[in-house]
Image: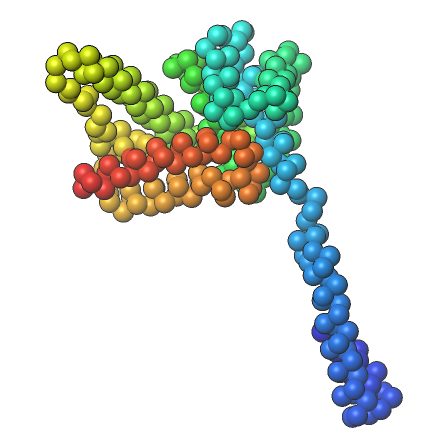
Length: 286
């Protein structure tokens, strides 16, 4: 645009109307050439290259395992259950070789007496300050570690509240996330028991011990509502709104594009599946 304006002005100064027309045309060619060069350089996106997605993923990865290690040691020592939970989490992510060693190193660093939880979470928050869904998922992963032994100890709850506060998450929303994860944890425990029962009964059926009766795997309404973070008086509209919001918050591809390490995509996938299962049950039960 500036090429046209300057071309018109200089053209008019030296050649009146004809010069202005010629200057306008030459200015247009200049603008076009400048735009092509700008596009080749990456356009406006080139101005934001400092906020590289791979750097964000590396920070999410290291911060997540370090804080997990710190929470695991909140009772004074890391139990075998917490170590097993951390290893299972690494297995789910498919971490091997150097990547697994990096995760173990970060987890170990979080257990050290000189580890600064405040500084680590503060640095994380500063980098992801506009990525609210990632901040919440980070908190949910820490809650998952705290729940790995099936019990949320008071020290663990206090640390989680501290992490939540530093992430800029309000107390009411922290309580909501915590309550919803408890429902998610209970649902997965039930699914695991069902799977074990099914395997046992299938084995008995193959051995000819009688007719096969599949175990009851029905999800009740209160459990489905809790998974969506709703109370018993929720309406059909409440259910739909909660479902859409939770699915948007835990969409794997979106979270990866914002900085979630690809290895951690499975976390978001499982959460999405639980949310979908709850919603499908409530739709059929309506």
